[in-house]
Image (cartoon, rainbow, N blue to C red; front, side):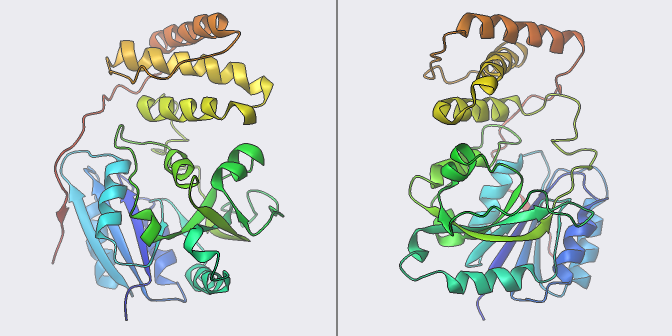
Length: 315
């Protein structure tokens, strides 16, 4: 039987949380899936742990390792290329999900009308907090919608989970410009041609307490990725509330200074700001940049593109 689902997990120094993903996968009622894990040069005991998981797994599992840091976008692109499933699920290395998740998502895909399926990029579902409560109330929207309308127009931007049509996903690539880049940049690009199918239920359990997570960090990290995300929001200016507009423009300049002055990155100069308070945003952005320097708020890790491929762990 052909593999139906490829679960992709990039991981870096997450030996303390990988058990959430593994245990969730081992408990799945639907078994026809593979788990592709790629380690990003961890210095904890992640590899030893993953080898142990492979011995115990009730499903197919492949382990890849980068000896030098590559970053999540490169890992995602590599794993997508290696994936054999008709569908892809991204499972963060500190995630968990309900035991009936894959079974219900497969069933839901079969209910999508045949005239809508070719233009359906993914099934979207909501997430739960660790205490079992939904992160947001029912969406109560139409079954099919574009990602841009969902996020920028309806402002339903709470954490979600995607069950992705791999045939469509393989037409695209995550931008390999930083160690982390918000996935919404790619989803916005995909939404120009394809829509989401809404399954208004909760399957993924989202944790925000992981010490080395992006959201938990007290420092500014991955400034190129964050800068590109801010640019994307500014391009969608018709959907930005006035009270958020100044803040976004301030942070645009803040991250511009961090990238160009602190890290000496060369940024794309084609993006032009048209904003009546541009001068004020520019000054305040520089003030925040100076504050970041004084209080050591910037994660001192410059991005270096890794041109090598990971090694597969076979035993």
